Length: 78
Image (tube, rainbow, N blue to C red; front, top):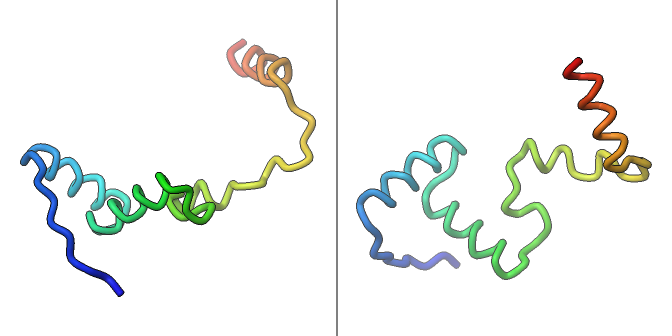
């Protein structure tokens, strides 16, 4: 069951929240819900964007460390 909640926020924060919600394709209510779920350690992936959720576990079992990343950057920026 969903229940209405009233929040008192500055006008600038409300506008930023609406812009963020629009960018993510969600409502401000869903953003707030996702935030509270993340705070209490909700279900894994609840507050993740679809792109991040799709990448989850992609490197499972990979044997990579900082040295590998440094080598990658050196090669990339030569």
